[in-house]
Length: 341
Ligand code: SF4
Ligand code: SF4
Image (tube, rainbow, N blue to C red):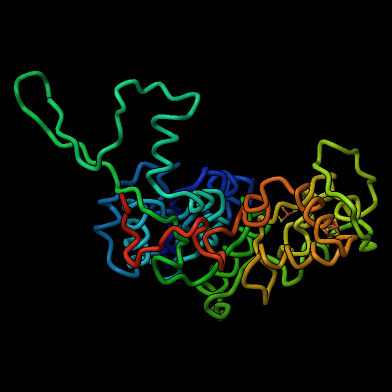
């Protein structure tokens, strides 16, 4: 009997939602099990890193890698799985564009550590303990010692393709089940039926328009005197949310989710990343908003824009890792990604 194709799934710096999304395949997960041998999936199966290290290069047919590269362990696993995999997919928004972890690129590591280990209201750390990459500890009370190692916390959160060569991208926070299925079927079709794979670098399982193009709401491109937050109004169920003053990222977001959020009255947050032919989601959204502000007066424009709470977290919530403005606050992006402190 012909060997089944080999599948690996891994999470780096992420929340784990992409892993859970795989389970949303429901009974289709049986098709996955029929087509693939899962050879590495730490969240579900007890394989060890040394099992992967022992595999021949290129022996994994498909690796779905989710999560950004925040530390040296993430980078090691990205390089290891790149070497072992024929097809490496940046799976989900963190691997594709940095997502929530990359919002930390608006701060340097020293500021992040100060907040987490000293200043946060929930911090209880009177001795000012900070994580060390290597720490000698006593073992067993008989004078023996050992070294506990932690990964190096990098200066900058990177996307998967800022770290290793990537074959395909699957956007979404998390990707929807139909997308995951489309990716798996694409690879199965190639392996079992000899169909060609899509061109390298393709975005798989998503649309090639904007979220607005698949939104059920009527958009009249109304001019706005103020922006509102979602809890401030009960939106009309049929009209465009942006027309009603909500900052909806639909004009700057790739289609493919079926308009999940906007269909239930919640503005699109942009998790599918920028649409085709747009390199920077945030600047695309700023340009979309510029055309709806109802004023020519600089002071009034300023006041209207002040109604957008947390502009970076709104315009770059998912794409900070790919933002052309790079690190906010002028922090450096070192060539080697090593921490600055
Ligand atoms: S801006 Fe938002 S609500 Fe309006 S059409 Fe686009 S996706 Fe729909
Ligand atoms: S509507 Fe926007 S934020 Fe919601 S799932 Fe779709 S792309 Fe993501």
